[in-house]
Image (cartoon, rainbow, N blue to C red):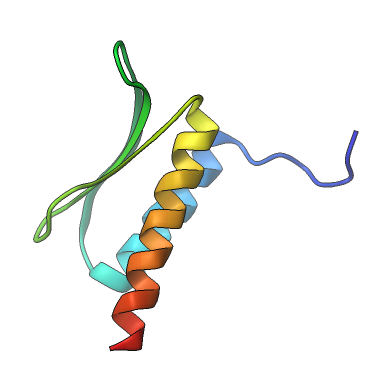
Length: 80
């Protein structure tokens, strides 16, 4: 067992929501669901932008992929 505590799904969603809200303003929805054909899908829905979607084999992996995708977009935005 590692010393590092595992984050819950709720904590991951809250972290993604906070990060998106800080950089893009109003966030309508951050969530995750199990799609029958694709697997786990994590999604951020904005008021003024298109949605961001990431997939994964489990809920935790889908949220990690969504956070990585959001972070890449924020980094690119900050470079400009």
